[in-house]
Length: 293
Image (cartoon, rainbow, N blue to C red; front, side, top):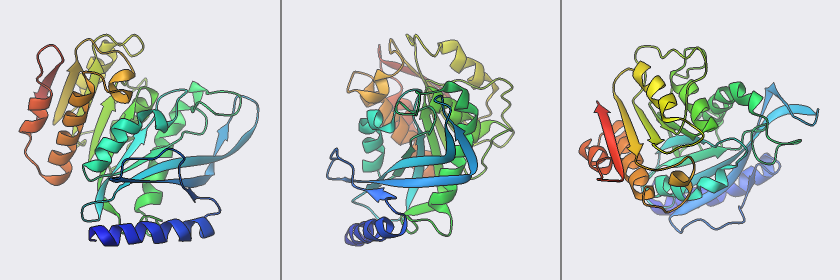
C-alpha cells in the first residue's frame, strides 16, 4: 500500500469497525505524533474468564491500543507490547511511538486484571493468564477476520513487555508451557521468568534489557533467564538505570533503548545490518551489551 492508501484504509476501517464491533474502535483523547495513527480496539476472548479482586468476573476483554505508521508501505511487521503491573499502555507512549515511526504496527493490550483500573484493583495472581492474552491478540490481528488485515504482515511478529509484561512476553515467546511459534523476535524489558521456565530449541532471537540499579526486578533475575536462552541473544545493560523510567521518559537511557530496540527489530524482521544494535548498546557510562548472535 502507498502512503495515501494506508491513510484511506485507516479511515475506512475506523468507520466500519465502529459500526461492526460496537465501540471496538474509538479515537484516543491524547494526540500521537503526526507520523503515528492511533486507534483503540476492543477484543473479547469469550473462551476464558477474568476474575477480579472485587469478586466479579467476566470474559477476558482486552482493550488494545493499536498504532500504525502513516508513512511507508504496508503490510508492516507487528509488535505486541505487554504493560507492567498496576499500569496501562499509555505510560509507554513515547517508546511505542518510536517503534511505530520506524515502520511497525504496535498493539498494546490492557490486561484485564493487572491494569491500574481493574475492578477492585490490580491483581498480580492473574499473570499466568497473560501469555494467553498475548496469543489471543496476535490471533485476532493476523487471522483471516482481522480488522487490520492488509496493514499487518502475519509472517513478521515480535513481542515485547516491561516488568510483569516482560514476564508474560518472555513466557509466550520462550516458555514450553505457553510458547507461540508465530513469534519471530522478543524484547524483554526489566523482566524475569516464571518458575519452571524452560526455553525450547529453535527459539526466536532475544533482546533482554535491564537497569543495573533496578530496585524491583533484580539484575540477577535477568541474568538467570538469559543464561538459559539459546542464541541469538543479546543483553543490554543500562548502567545506573532503575525499573520504569528508561522506557517511559526522555532520560539519558531513552535514546539507547530506542536505537537498540529498533536496530534489533530491523535486523531480525527486515534483514538490516546488526552493527547498529551493537553500537547503540556500547555507550560509556550509559550502556553496555553482551552479544551472542
